[in-house]
Image (cartoon, rainbow, N blue to C red; front, side, top):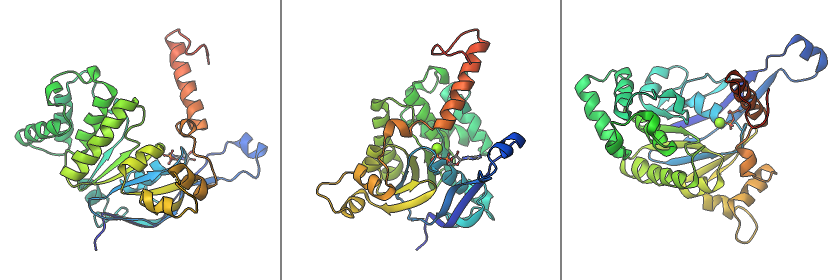
Length: 299
Ligand SMILES: Nc1ncnc2c1ncn2[C@@H]1O[C@H](COP(=O)(O)OP(=O)(O)O)[C@@H](O)[C@H]1O
Ligand SMILES: [Mg+2]
C-alpha cells in the first residue's frame, strides 16, 4: 500500500547559539536541542491524522520537515511517495501548508484579490485562476464576502482564507499547524466541522494537523499521535488509546498522563515560556514606540 505520509526515524536537532559569556556561565549546557527524535509514522490516504502535544513538543518542527521547509538532521520521510529531501519540488507541488499566520495576507486587498494573487504564484493562467478562486471561495463559504477587504474579516474568516489558499493547487495532502489557535470557541468549533466534513469527507484530502487541544484531537481525528519532548509516545484512534488504560471510563487526559507522565494543562500548553516572554518583549517594545505601555508593563 502506498502511504500519503511515511517517516523513518525522522529527527531534527537545532544547534543552540551560545554566546561567549554564556559558555563561561553554563559550561555544561548542551549545545543542541533535539526538537524531533526518531519519529516513525505512516498515514494512509484520506486520513484525518492529529499530532497532539504541549507547546515545545516538536509539532511545528515535524510539520516543517514534512513540508520541506527545513531539512531533517537524520532519517527520511516520504510525502505522496516523494522524498522530502531529494524530491522537495514534487512534494511542494502535491501538498498544501496552512499556518495560522494572518499577517501573510494583504490586508488592504479583498479576499478574492488575495487569492488571485496567490494563484498567480502557482502559475495559474488568469482565467483558470478566477475559476479556481471562486470554486474555493464557495468551498470555504466566503463567496458572499469575497469583495470585502481582508482586514474586515473575523479571525475565523481569516483562517478560512488561509485554508482556501492552502487548497489552491488542489493538493493531495494538507498540513495544518494548530488551525484553531487563537479562535474563540464558537469559531473554532465551526472550523473543526468544516475541516472534517468539507476537506476530508467531501474533498477526500489527507489532513495532517497539529493541536494542543485534547477535545479537538478527540472530536476530529481518526488517529492521534501523542508527542512530548520530540518523541512519539503512542499512536492510535482515541478509542484505542483509551482502551490501553486499565481504568474505568478513561479520558484522553488520562491517556496523556499515562504516556507522558504529565498532566495536560491546556491553558499552559498554549503558552511557551520562552516564546511568550519574547512575544511580550516584542509587543512591549512596539508599545513603547507608539509611546504607550502594554498591560502596564513598559519594557
Ligand atoms: N529554529 C529553531 N532554533 C532552535 N530551536 C528551535 C527552533 N525551532 C524550534 N526550536 C525548539 O524546538 C522545540 C520544538 O519546537 P516546536 O516544534 O515549535 O514545538 P511545538 O510546535 O510543538 O510547540 C522547542 O524546544 C523549540 O524551542
Ligand atoms: Mg507549534
